[in-house]
Length: 428
Image 1 (cartoon, rainbow, N blue to C red):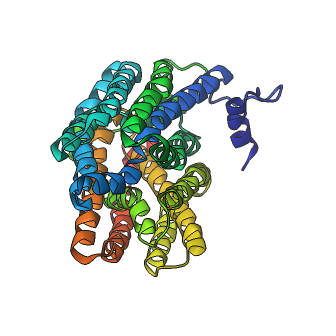
Image 2 (image 1 turned 45 degrees about the horizontal axis):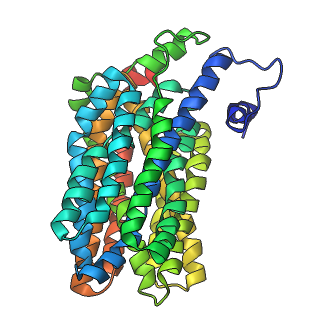
């Protein structure tokens, strides 16, 4: 890690850059403002996903209380993702026009209310409506708007900034499942949903109020940097570019794998004969790996390049997933899950970075809205497919092998989707 990266990180821990240190392409004031926005957006993502990340812990509890199958329960997060993806284009376009603050604040308000409402669920259709359809609408902005907002603030350190931002999401997978499991054990699942809703309001609403786009005329930046920050494809140009659809497919395959593991990992480990709290530790380990992976591979992608970083992460992810299929001991499984989380976060961060490098930030909210539909479709299919495969075969192994094959295809689609014509390299 070089001196510029270290100086960029100093504001996050309350220190000013060394006296006399200056970089011409970004003023100190603007840099500090940018990192404040990164922190605020990360808090929003953590606040929402901390409550949502524990759904896999609720899955066996709801199945036991109501007698619903795992496949049937898994339809709820799938509906959440599909509904959110269908409206993500409109959300992204609104963010491009109006900025992030109003959209994120409104989303956080409704997400908290819906988690509280989930405490009243008594029928399967209640689950689908509250945590599927309505929560899908409310959460549609929570990944899309923060990532596009942060992408507008940074050029040279975009990988690092995105890594720190998305680490907030992955921190939720460390704290959320354990928190949900602990609260369920002590107070029951209904009271737990009330607490999770309140936490969304306490964390995500204040964070939303601190988000904003960078000033239109950024002082202290060179003409090259200003062109880089504002250039890129219009939405119409992106829609007509086959690379957009290649990246949509690549992200769809990543989403299939990531959400399948997030939703079913606790159940997979619990089937080994351990307690619910020990099984939920698997998500904590996975989440810890993703936090490290977000920042580590964000920095690596800035230095080594986006494509090589993505390829490396996909390789580690495939190897880890296939090793998990071999039913290792719990201690070995913990090690594999950490490596899986590390590489999964790296591949996701570099794909977002690659999309921004390919299409620029001119209409990045709308473009990312289209891209996120691909991720969400894959993420919706993953948990549902794994649930019904388990119901039919009594094992998650076929689903895990299927996901590993999808990761290999994702690498090929990403490579083709980030091939940039020479005439557009000016805004990378």
